[in-house]
Image (tube, rainbow, N blue to C red; front, side, top):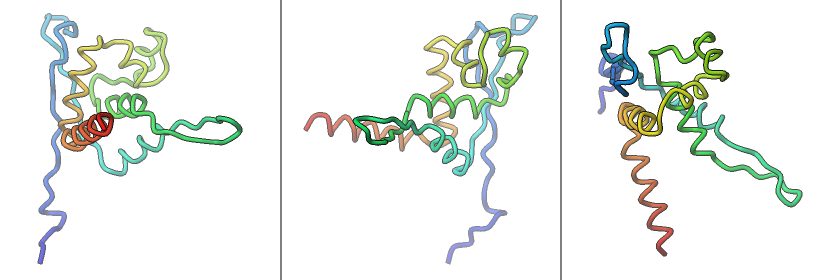
Length: 140
């Protein structure tokens, strides 16, 4: 018999990571990005909001947009800096946390942050298995 109860569940702690030396404070010390894990409910909402609908030959279809999902996932997990800061969004001419993140990060910085978010949310095994599965199917 399992003794799973609320007292036995360990909280996933936020982590801080330096994404790049480009982000530094007034003393030239690198600024850390604080990221958090999300719940399965939050993830399902992000996934649902990443479905794209289209009309093709008079038929309504849909597909899961992985790029949209990953952008939403990363921006949703960033606690600090505050990507919802309207002043910062206005300064970069964007609307939304995911748009701001894509505007301020280089491709390598984004991939580093994405890797940490995937690891913190225990998605590394799942996403790796899906990539392997797709790769193997393409070779058949």
